[in-house]
Length: 66
Image 1: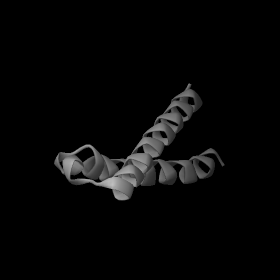
Image 2 (image 1 turned 90 degrees about the vertical axis):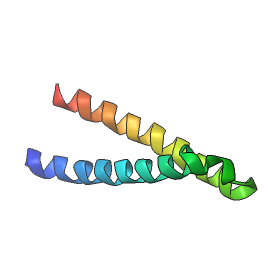
Image 3 (image 1 turned 135 degrees about the horizontal axis):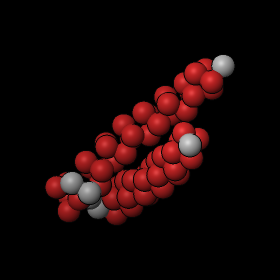
Image 4 (image 1 turned 90 degrees about the horizontal axis):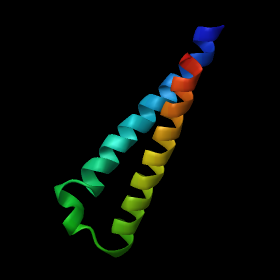
């Protein structure tokens, strides 16, 4: 039962990590200077929400391991 309970969380973490990597590449990478107006703000919003969600999930995951 424990393995089953951890499986969806693991999948969500992987998806968020993937989104984080994509958003980091486009928001914080060399392309940052090319972003303009709405697309730039939207990209940074996605990036910051991914970072905060991912770090929250990571914390929950670490607490769950103890």
